Amino acid sequence: MPASVPNTAAYFTLENHTAHAVTLVEVNTTVAKEAQLHTIIEENGMVKMRQVAGFSIPSHGKLTLQPTGDHVMLLSLTAPLVVDDKVPLELIFEDGQQLMIELPVLKQTAPQDGEQADHHHHH
Image (cartoon, rainbow, N blue to C red):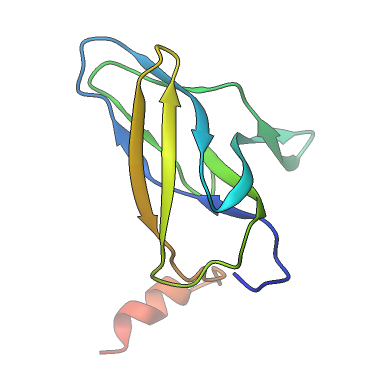
């Protein structure tokens, strides 16, 4: 992200292999002052981002965080992120369990109509 952009988002998939549902309630990271759980809702024809208290992951189910739905917002980055850097995230669940993960920084591409189709046909 350019230095002028103070916020970014994190996307990943979590799988729950236990017999009980779990709820992700907090994310901590050293690369931003705050990490918030967000979802996308449609309200009166407008798509809006809303902070939520947690994401439930059903027993033997998964949670996919992606640009068009649930995601983690990293607010007030402490330094610009560089492509291929690793971003540590501490995931905290409602039952007190913690999980440390690392995500690679990827270049964000602006989706354009037909971009995917064109991309796959130029060999």
